Length: 121
Image (cartoon, rainbow, N blue to C red; front, side, top):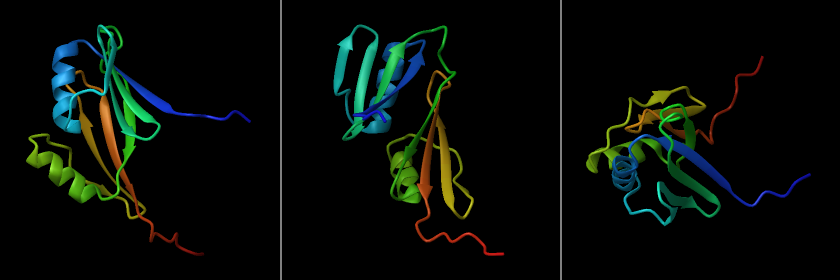
């Protein structure tokens, strides 16, 4: 079995400067790395990164799922930063909210209910 070291989600965009500004607002800080022209990267947790890459042909066709500890607090904090997420959907075992970036890529925030117990038959 392979040993994985990290995950890097690549989100293609058509306007790199606008995407960097938007992700900087959402994440709350400038990119951690800009390894080449048209690419910006943010480290979200130890081994998970988001990479925004200039690729107009593929822009808006990607999505990622970001797990959060408290989705209600997370969405409220983003609103205070001027970033508006979609309505929080509650499915009992999870809550989720979607946030499209300027290119149309979808950022999905998910909170998993640690107290959920499936119904028994």
